[in-house]
Image (cartoon, rainbow, N blue to C red):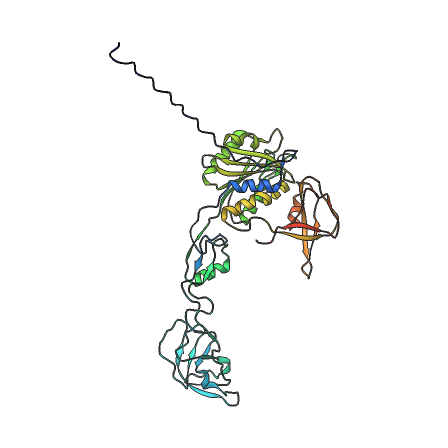
Length: 441
C-alpha cells in the first residue's frame, strides 16, 4: 500500500466563449423579403438613445430640449409699477377733472425706473413717474402726461383717473412658484427672454447631436471644381443631408467625398468616430458591384442591410460602428432617395437624440388637384406643392416625375405626398396624406 495516495486530477474548467455582440433581431419582412417603412424606422429608433443632459447658458440653449421643469423664484412684475410716463396720484383727488375744469395737484418730485422709496404719497399731491418705476405707497392711479399740462411744481389734470389706472400689479404676469417650462419642451427665442426675466441664466438641456455626413462614389466632384469627363457629376447629397441635419438642430460635420475604395472608406469612417454621435453616408448600399459601403462596413461594426417597401429609398443600411457603437445610417445614392430616406429615418433619429417631440412629420390631408398614380406594394413618396385657400383647405399638386434623380422638382416641393402600399391611384378631388416639409414642428 503506497504511503501517499495519488493526487486526484482537478476537473478541467471549461470557460465559455463570450457571445459575439449582435444587433437585435430585425423586423419581419413580407414574402419579397422587404420591411415596411414604419418597422424599419422603429428598428432604428430602438438602437439610439437620448443624449445625456448638461448645463447650458440660456442663449446657447436655443432650440434645444430642456430636461427639467423650470419654476419661477420671483413675481413678475416684482412690484407695482407704472405702465405710462405721467403722474402717480390718489385717484380720488382727480375725480371731476375735465378740460374746462382741471384739478391742480402739488408735485412732490420724480421717480425714475430703478428708483425705490418707502415714503408714502400725501393726499392732494402727485409725483412725476416714469414707465416701469415703482408706485409709491398710497398712490393708486397714474395719470398719463397726455392728460396733464406736464407741470413741475404744480400739475393740472384734465381727466379724472380710475382706481388702478395704468398700474402693473405685482405678480400679475408670473407668480413665484409658477412653472415656466416643462421638461421636454424645446427652448425658443421667447422662452430665452422669459427665462432671463425670472433670473435664470443656465438650464439643463440635451446637446446638439454631432452628425458626420459623408458621400461615397468615384464619379462625384466637389462643387466649384471642373468636371474632368461627362460621366462625372457634382456632389449634392452631402450638402443636402448636411443642411437637412443642421436644420433639425444638429452640429454637422460634412466630411466630403470618398471614392469607391474599400480601404479609403474604412479609414474615413474610422477617423470620424471620435467626434460623431451619428454618421450618415450616402451611396454604396445597393446591389451593384461598386457598392463598397455595403461590402466593407461589417468589418467595422454591427451592420444591418435591408430593402424597405418604399419608393424611392428601397435600399437601406444601419450599423453600430467601432468600440463605442456609434450609430451609422447608410442611405442610397440618388438625391431624392437620400432626402426622402432622411425624412423617413434620419430626422426621427436626430430628434430622439435631442429629446425633441414629435419625432415624425405631422401627416395632414390635402386635396389632389389631378390624378396621382402609385406602385402597389410599396409606400410611394411623391414630391408635392401644397397651397392653402382662404378657408384653410389644402390642395396638392405633384411636381416633377417619380425619378429619384430629379433634384429640381425636390427643391420646388414643400411637401411629400404619401401613398400607402395598397394604393395604386388617387383620383383628382380626393384627399391624400402629405408630410409638410417647411412647417416647424
